[in-house]
Length: 281
Image (cartoon, rainbow, N blue to C red; front, side, top):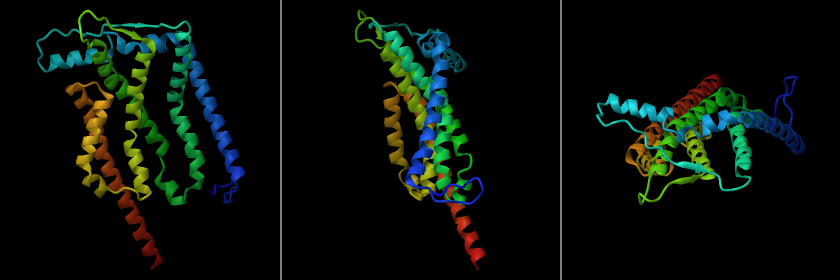
């Protein structure tokens, strides 16, 4: 790796220098997580009552929007949300430990843009000038896609899963009393899964930059990708056709967008190569 020094020239870094640089990146990243986690810990009422437990109540925004959407499509059935279950804690220190662990996860999520920026600052000096130029805005787009995935997971995938699983019964005499850890684990898994799935365009961008993937390959294996996306949507969502379709559509759109990104990357590489050949002549 050849990072630029303050004077503008480049110098080789030893293995110890790399470790020292990485150490400070890790320290700053850890501090940011601790700061956000501490803020989340003290915002207990908003964190749990409004944010975490929101999808467990009938007045959640998603349920109301689906109700209005059904009326807009002419549904005459009464719009009654069926989210009705009890969340309980069965361990003496369960709520305290869950408060701490949830605050830590929220700290990582809130600090994610900064964490990726620190990673990018460590990797960027090892890139060639044209690679740095072509990768401008990487932190911004990764952060935007992560946030969009979080919102989609929290407002679409997680409520659909929670609503289905909490209302599913094998017998009317069995009452659903959900453990707090199970509920939060389901909510976190659904939300973070969508957040990382939404990073597909950026993953394809970097793979295309490295020459590991081309738009022709993605088009050739489009049918296979659709099957994988359907399986992934089935894993993320409950076994309900409408829920799977709602989750599948944006992932398919992201795949098509990724094909366009790979095509754009190759076009830029060809233009750069032609420009270098013209200058060489």
